[in-house]
Length: 136
Image (cartoon, rainbow, N blue to C red; front, side):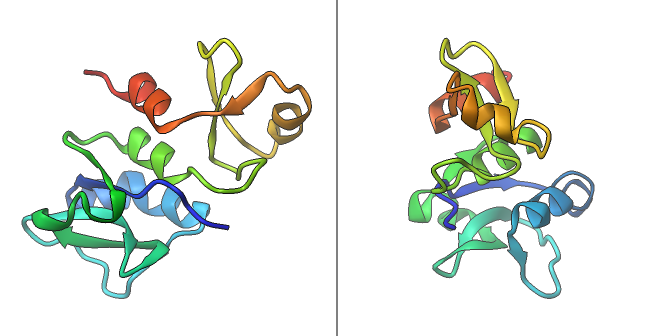
């Protein structure tokens, strides 16, 4: 499986530990050893050519490798974009939208069969997730 949407965002160590670490690990991302936020660094997916690795990089790298840069702290959008995969039926944690594109849901163990069978749910696109989860 390949994660398809690299992303970056400025975070503090507390924000990372509280809101992002567990969800990223649950999706299947690997964190580097001694994972600590330093001043003027940004949390980034797709690190060192590996799409399932997460690290911190400085500002000049926030849009490399097609990363979408989230300018304000938005953990829900970061996780939603990070969960986008190349699996035809998605992965647990990936977002779907209905065919009218007015409702969104996350694929969970409880919803996975209905999302695939009903054919009324489609994988959400990057643009749809940004519009739906960005408060600005």
